[in-house]
Image (cartoon, rainbow, N blue to C red):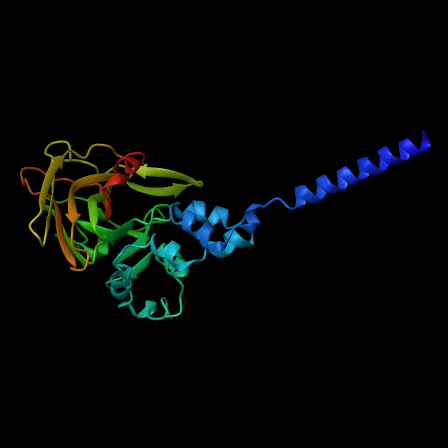
Length: 297
């Protein structure tokens, strides 16, 4: 009986050892070749790639592959880099040795150009191209006359300042931008607010003292492109106290190698009444699929 027990115990121990060895020899995610992992990562969005890079060494190495991140960059990203690098402060921002992942990362940070009046960046999640133009980069009728307009410093603007209209008869804002837009469809918006905001006891307050005239006639928005596309719309501005993106129109870029010039305007030139109390922050160019997202603001 003792012999039998000893044999059973020995057999049991051998089986357990064999089972453990077998379990430890099973392949795991860490055994996948980096090239195979990278071939999968190329189909994922940038945030998903960054999360998976934390799994193990294989995923971390694969997440740095140039072909993975090049698929996330706009096809004409070199033209975009050349355009924003014309700004003196950005000369060393894109050295030649940068890998595609680092280029993507830097393009996701807003880059100023045209004297700091414009900014361009990639949306971190989608890699889509975005652009904004400050009120300083717009041609505003009467902007130099302090009886009508003033510049306000504010934390609520990407450019830290807005143009504030106190009162005027002839309202006209024009702008233009030339840029190597990546292929796709874009929407142009004016970011406006009725009333001027400030902080009081740490709380946001909006002064609507000068708001008048916008409910009598609609504002007309227009855009046109260098390849003949046009759009126009009009609407009343009647929601004081919050920033609103007013949709001007859409345009499509087919040839990303040729810079596209976009001209746009916002007018209310009916001189039968004055209008005032409006903050003009900036103009935005976003991928058209972002339109529903902007409605949440």
